[in-house]
Length: 207
Length: 244
Ligand SMILES: [Fe+3]
Image 1: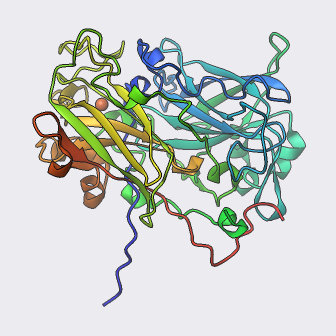
Image 2: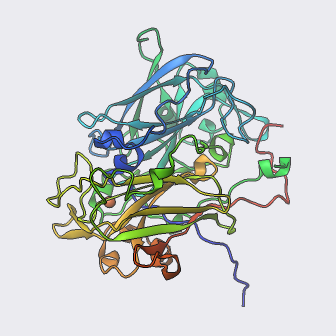
Image 3: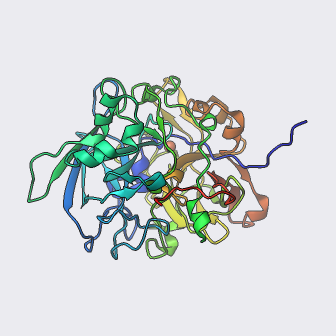
């Protein structure tokens, strides 16, 4: 008889449901409870590098905006370091690199301000192009979806990026690259449309 | 932490334990489920790192849902304690990690501008809490037992009493949201959202158990709920996860 292994098993995911804001962003649910809601300031005032604005929309398989999605962003600083003990070195005081993003309930539009991350070390001596790591939850999404946003004005770094190059269908790589629009208030604006299903479906990662 | 540990990779997620994206019994998933396969990534720094939180981020009362929104007295309902540990697949504690919860009140109504269920809002109940695990991975919340509530899926679907639970773990690849159910609830096996999970044991793992040893006599009844996150490979082999 084979030996049984005594690993525990990862707790199963369940949808965040329509009222995720109560738990993770109560202000958006319509009430004030905590001294400070977490995830509102991604980069902090001391962060170095280019300040940017990122805006977008999540679209479902019927072509409608998803108005109750909650996104989390995880990114490196302008030096390509993450605010974590294994993140590659010290970061600026107050730089967290993590944020929570709520949509406008009427339109589904979301946006946030941050700094553009630097390139991040990849596996085996490679270099990853600047990118934001995104995690999406909503009603109807049974397990949080992981994706990445790259920057259209980093064409060479994107062409060399080891993760983008893993995507066999070259035309799908573009789903992860946010075009740069016109600057606003002196800041570059990137627009990232995430398509959950159908034509132009965004690439999601099993990390 | 040694260099070898720093380079160790996490076990891949066993997707058989989790609901697939497309689960037609839960209708909202139909238009919100990707149809192409996900691209599997080996760990990079982007996945093994993740946000860290400290005691300066939260207040001591944040994990007490009986008190953290009370205006004129205690909220209505059955007083309960929910406690447990956050562990990895090797049974090792995950210390100092943020656990956040949210739930309906005793009548099954959420304090959310989008919830219009006819059960009343409780003026003394917000319905959310958060805490950090201690060095042994333990967490505890005090709250009231949420009520079951109806939802639009089939016309007669009712959610079993549940608490939504969000946990961070040590890296972005640990990020998890789930729901905690209560032992003995007859609505669990007929809930379309519970049924999105294909593995019966994985469902059992979401059911908090009555824990008489942790109850406060004449005050609050207790339920125990452990959360398991992905484990990390031991350090026998050096992986070149970081450059050079
Ligand atoms: Fe719920």
